[in-house]
Length: 450
Image (cartoon, rainbow, N blue to C red; front, side):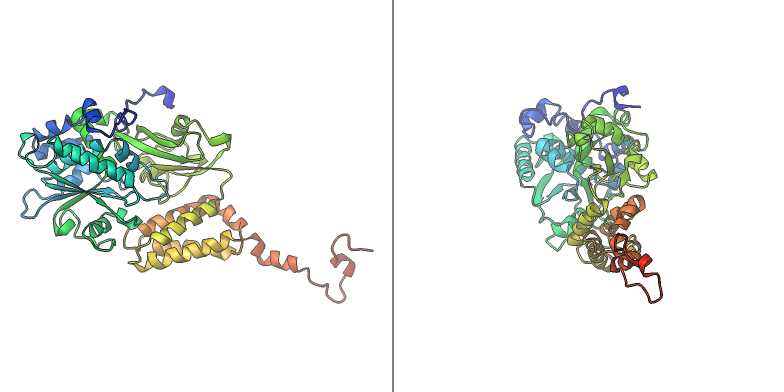
């Protein structure tokens, strides 16, 4: 069904983005702001968790794990404090949905934090923001101050007896801190490196206490669920992937940007929203969820972009960072640039990722420079096999995805880089002298006869 045949989607996550001073408390309250928190605080924590479970909200940070189930892992009775940590360390190439959300509507995130913390019996929430994102960080600081002055944060929120403090914390620009346990180590003041699991954060997370780590978009969606109800939420999207989603469309399209649409929307429909391919140059390849997800081609225009649809087609939904490339772009070059990023961002904790990303980048750089051989393609795939599933965290898997899928769909482009170094090509270039007794005229180049 085309976009034009579908009922138009009423904006949910982005409905306040174009309002004047949308980041201010005054604007937020005029547009249903902080009405959901009143409903949530009048219910029990278990009822709030059950509502989120019934809605089928899945994590918007890439993994797609059911949010309500994750919240339910937190112990109900524990002598230790409970923590809610918001992962706002957005740093993957192409991923750019959380920063504009925090810029335009920070109070939606704060209200979601209050509801989620109440459901998990947490009294302290940390929002871990990427250090380079200075402007959204300032917006969050100001929004937290406004919310506290209005009585939505601090002691005895709205007379409910529930207390909550929110701390906005600046990271230092390490991509690995997007991995939840590396984020927790960084938040504790240590070098950001992934932890061995188990124990999982719900049992032993921040300061060895029960912790839940959620993505910005996941938590910002919660107030809408509380206000609208689980059935309303499930009316959007697909059966197993319900709800709206922010698709970050970048690259060779006429109008790149953030597009809110139901989960299950296809690239063909997104391109219609974006005004089509830039200058009419045809599509060549694209990523459904950022540089860490296997590539798709023009043959995948109608793949439903939800968690199941992307997986069935051989990729992942990831963060719905839809990077679109036209026919002018070299696939090996694009894959090389992504691999250089993962080489630089590897934390170095495990050998497969530390050494493997280095060698992948070296081989790809040699190939793109015209000094590769056909054997390099097999070497790349062999190194990928020794990284995928063997690294300490998912960064290794992310690094090999574009290489494996790039070779799968565009092997000829990789081979073309090696043409000048093939043995027969090198032999032809040498033009050896004819052997004695041979037909010297036949051996000479055409046009060499007297």
